[in-house]
Structures are given as C-alpha cells and as structure tokens.
Image (cartoon, rainbow, N blue to C red; front, side, top):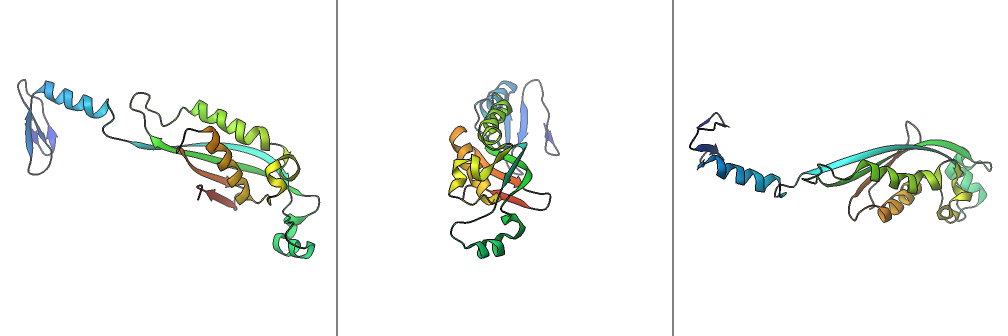
Length: 181
C-alpha cells in the first residue's frame, strides 16, 4: 500500500502512487519489468558534466599586426612588451553528455586526460605561443584566442557534441570562458 508518497511491497500486490490522483496496482514482477526497462535501457536520460583541470606555463606578447606600435602599446599596455611575458594558465575542460546507463559515465576521465595532453600540454606547455604554435602566427595570443584554439582542437579529438566549455584562468582575477559560440 502507499502511504505518504511511499510504496510498500506486499506479497501479492504493490501500490505505486504516480500522482495525487492515479494509483496503479502492480505485482512485484511487473514493477521489476518497469524498473528494468526504465533504468537499464536508458528511457530516462541523465545528463552529466565532467570537468578536468590542467595547468600549463607559456609566454607570449600581445601585439596585432593590424595596429601601429603606438596603438599596440595603448591597447595592450605592459602585455605588449617586445620581450613578452609569461603565465601559469589553469584550464578547465568541461564535457556534457548523457550518463551511460551501463558504465555510469559521460566519458572515461582517462580518455579526457589523454585528449588534454594531446591538445594542451604537448603543443602549449613551456612554449612561446607566438613563435611555437602556428595558429598564433596570424592570431593575437589573447586568452580569448587561446580558449578558441583549445576548443577547436578539443572538438577534433572528442566524440561529437560532447565538448561543453573551456575556462582559462590567465591569473586568479582574469578568467575567460568559451563555449564554441
């Protein structure tokens, strides 16, 4: 019988309160069939978010070929230093997807870690972004553009439509979020 929204199993019938006005009388075997089809076969989709954090160090100079030297100094200030400057970036890569009813995962974190190694650590860590990463030969290496670079390359190695967000902490106070828009 049902009492206060809770269901109790009797040896013969189970009453399940579905709403304030509908009560179904189900045998225990019928209940198991319903529960199994609902949970094991994924009729209820659960969406999860997984975030992996990775840090890397890199240097760069903010300088646009479309601006004069004076304009570059005005726009970028000390970040336009001809010798460049460095950051210890912290990147959060978030994926979003259906929680697999068999594995219980949106994505295996080991696989996400490998993708991050390939896309972030190998090409960017301890590099001069402007000189060592071809993408930045023609694009100003702002944190916004670093986020775009990471997004574009993560999207190539992850399953389709799984990538949700790239968040980069250039400093504790300067943070960029990019969602592929």
